[in-house]
Length: 349
Image (cartoon, rainbow, N blue to C red; front, side, top):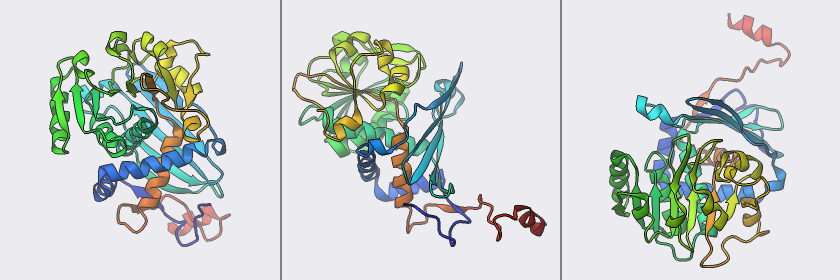
């Protein structure tokens, strides 16, 4: 169990954006995501130990703000995250986030960290982790449709965990596609830029869709998806936002993080409430199979779940030990007498 000792309880480790970038670059992005994926797998295998609830969302015409909480017997964690697709037009990030990990034993926070960068890393790590269980054997080529902020992380994670080396890119914004191609070529990938989603999926064994618009969209139509592929659908993540034609869902074996949340937010919001799906923990614990046949179409309908963020918080907390990738944040009042908070205030005057 994680405890805060008297010597360190007066401060909270804070990992800023700069700290996070130094931590990731120090390890290497692929090594970081391999380690993060291992923590995610460990925690999903402990599924019965966690409090589980769909995230709490506040929707507005421009986007959504969400809280994503969970806890096991030792720690409580939550993430604050927004999703505002139109932010890009004004020079802002579509997604920003921060997170807190606390000790269940006494309620004290034991980590505060940025999670804009960390969310991109954990999303990609989760996708690639499931790719190990769901993608065809000996995969080498992935189509990535939607080349925004998540694109490069997905590519690196799938190389680190699944061996992807060739990428077929498409985005309706040519500048986004050029950006992704430039970044990923520098990382050693073989890149093909495609002028349409139809061309992008040709020859790809994995299809990743990561578009941002908050609308019912059809990025993949039924005729674009052949037998034997794995679809990694990560863009549809709130009510009224999808990427796949319904007919694709009816042909696929569907895997989700937490069905009560995904049925509201994911691609399967298009289906009946009792349509069969498999939750990831069932695959990771060996209770249900992942891919069973070469011709099978597998679909990871990913919307993000709080346990993934909990795993990311645990991973970062462990990784910063012995580094200078954090600062001590004075955010906990610590009077000599716990009952005399007012006396602490007066003495400070």
